[in-house]
Image (cartoon, rainbow, N blue to C red; front, top):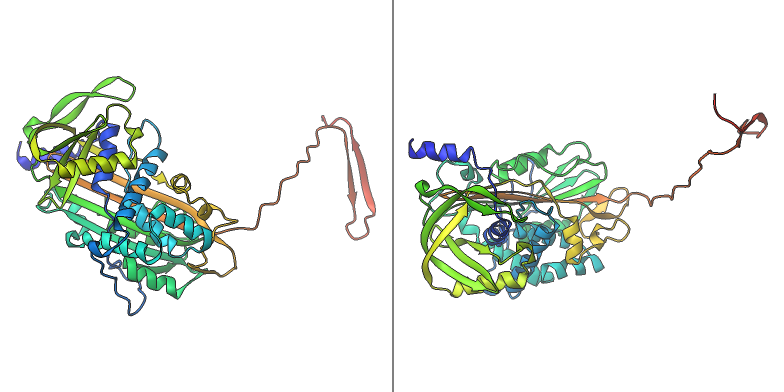
Length: 441
């Protein structure tokens, strides 16, 4: 079989078992940086006039480390919200960017909670997000490369943000300027209650086709959708030899053993051990990005943001050494992850409350109704083979208009003898009066 044929046949049969520990490590390590974007190139997208995205160097962002630490907390919370015993993939950076965009339209206690989640407030938060996104701008490229047979020699990280506004919301001009300034986000106006095809088209384009459609549900109360996307196409600095890939034993969480298609190579890479966790750092391309493989002593879900930071520091300080690496090939495409539980668990429940959320900075609902976060979903795909990694994630936050407070339901169960009176509405003149003692007939 030719080299190309081997790759083609391999990629058509990628669905294999995977260690939850490796899933957590790769998902957090590969997509841990927040990303920048240009407006959608398709027609119909506009930007606040005269506003260019701010340029902030990482060294010039005072709260950068705080935001990175907070993003790790976001990632751990996202994996904790995923179904137990199933593979999970999260892009902490994508959710952090989307929440930061939402925070710029929040006020009062809602804003305070969101900024606590994000690790910084006001201009320091905006500068940190802009700096993190800007640090990855040099790797920007066509998202379609993620579908190419050959991975690029140097990593491509494509980034995009967009705001879709319903025709029943008048957005705040200041909010639109902030979106363009910090996130380079364009704005599209559609009827979100009837048609989300614009969301679908954007998702498919900016995920490189790995994600086919939006996860947002059309709703007459939907007023605004924030979208953030990231695509990674990255070749290992030292690819795994294809001839070494073979079925190898893998122990599942319940202790049972299976055979999983597993790559193998002895690589000269950084290696570290922290609190019983064993870790190796596999670089991509020239080393600007890397994947940290983290093997726990037991349950991988006990990982904490502090532990992940300690492992990162240990690997950064470690000198390369020969490491025999076994790594299963991966094709992870979990179900869309509902992020509302994660947002609440992280400490921002008010934005989800239709009676208390304060998102007045976004704009004004034409019906004067309160805005709140009604939908929050992330979709992700994560693929690993001998050549490298292909991944995409799309985060979507749907802001809805709250309805009238629900009226308590009163029960009237006619389950014992009762009367029925039929009367003229205007005069109350009784026309029929029936006593029902046995309804059987």
